[in-house]
Amino acid sequence: MDASTTETAPPEGVRTFRGRSLEEILPQVRAELGADAIVVRRREGLSGGVAGFFQRPFAEVEARVPHPDELDLGEGALRNDRATAEGLPAIQALVAQARPFADALAVAQGGVAERAHEVLVAAAASADAPAGLYGPQPSVSILAGDDDEVLEAEPYEPVALSAPAPAFAPEPAGPRRPAAAGTAVARLIAGGLSVDLAEDVVAEAVAHGLPFATPRTLKKLIRTTFARRLPVMADLGAGPRVLALVGAGGAGKSAAVAALASAYAAAGADVVVVALRAADGGRALAARLEPLGVSVLAAASAAEASRRLEGRSAALVLVDTPAAGPGDRPAVAALARELRELGVLEVHLTAPATLSAGAGDELVAALAPLGITHVALTHADQTARPGAAVELAITARKPLSYACTRDAVAPADPLELAGRLLP
Image (cartoon, rainbow, N blue to C red; front, side, top):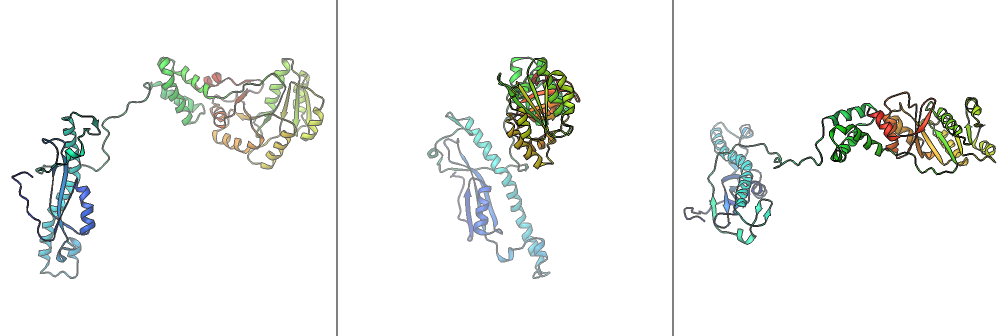
């Protein structure tokens, strides 16, 4: 203790509480003396250290239990029926006497922590040891000193008790995002992609494409990035295929079957089409395909279709199925049994390019019993915004097989589709 400082014993009934900060002490005061405890003295300063360095902050509070006549100070006491007109001036005087202590506590609660942080930072800057949170730190034994230095109270401007701002903001983990990236995101969303996928594709192109290119090639980088995300049909082999196209009414199943059969027949392949439970008995398909040498077999059931296929060896068997959608679970279950009976190995879900994202998700869930293996994009010539249907292949994790228009079909080309979404 400094020689100029004299210690006197606290008055009777007054207890001394000591800790690193008032925030640490006050809960102990309330716990031991009650919520109405009266603080009669407080001080804060630094203790320990070596040659004035590495000292730790401390705070000390002297408090006592209030006397019975000191309870219920303030407006509550003024309304107390036991108070008499003669006693009110004395109660008001006690209120005025206690207010400075309350104000001092409010200031101290906001200031001690910040003052302690400033002192520790200043001390760390003067030390020469391995750095820690506040710079070099001595051992606990060195900190255990006996001298206390009382700091004079200084004016303090209270601040809002909020989380301290970080000392520095981390730099973005990647190349700087060009202004054109925002435009690309907007175009992808306008093309039918979800906001999340559009943002993610552009962010990947910027982070992992720009290091090997220039901002002028950003559009090409985004197209390439999206094309890599799009699963497409592969590893078909050279053997025969049995393929069914399924979907809701008006999805373009029959048009896709006709286009595929025409393309294979034009290349000289032996193609057979099964019109399963077709409303017109397969007449429309027969009128279009039989002149090309394609056999069209109308069948009311899978058993009938199997009988008519016996002895036939075709490079491609296409099954045009009846409409099945989310509103008819029994029809979906019946169709699933028929496809198994026919030995269908590829089940292509026809997804119109005009399909919305919500309807697509609902359709995939409803037709899951059919064992969907691929997604075929249909009505591709009816909109310039096929993003939702294309994204369906990504979210459903099914390869995109074909892109079909009213009169033509071609294997899905990821780069071509990416170019349509981001022209």
